[in-house]
Image 1 (spheres, helix red, strand yellow):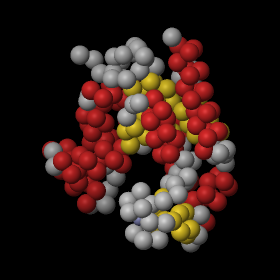
Image 2 (spheres, protein in one colour):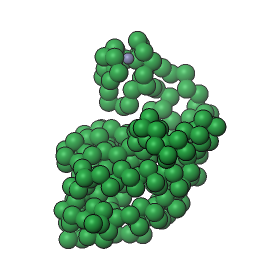
Image 3 (cartoon, helix red, strand yellow):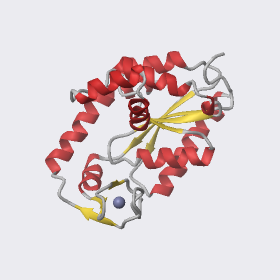
Image 4 (cartoon, helix red, strand yellow):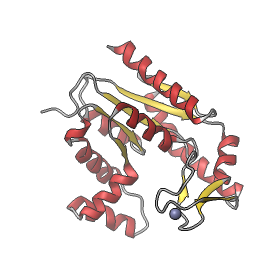
Length: 221
Ligand SMILES: [Zn+2]
């Protein structure tokens, strides 16, 4: 049986820098379409906790302070995409992070439905402002994604932290740009690639994201 063989499936890869609201939008889109949001941060934690051979390999790398490499990440995502709940599609967030991972993903899925890739674009100065104004839980310290009003861990109220230094934030964004640009280059010549303006309200970004996905699916069926 081939993976993800339904031609009505919505298979979405979300790209975007830290602070672009990617996680919030991925969650919202997934909920609206009744498909799983697959965040590599989450499945990496699950895999490590499950204690499988792959989980142990990932844990060794992370314990040594390293970044989990292409083989392990691709293995973990392959395992996740083989579960039955992705039959109607998925929103993938945090993968691919490298061109070899993007190539592996192309090899994983069949061609009966397109892989939609959406890049959420936000000007750097806007991201710097957003990332400097972080909301954390006043009780447990949980870092809240944009748009959150109460702590998802303990229900505590959120307080604003403004001590993230601009230079650190800009370094983080520069690192993202260097590592992600090759992936954008890999996808952007495809007719299934779209950019969405992320410098809008959460609702407007969500509407543009839906329209972008619809334009791809409408144009390729
Ligand atoms: Zn809390």
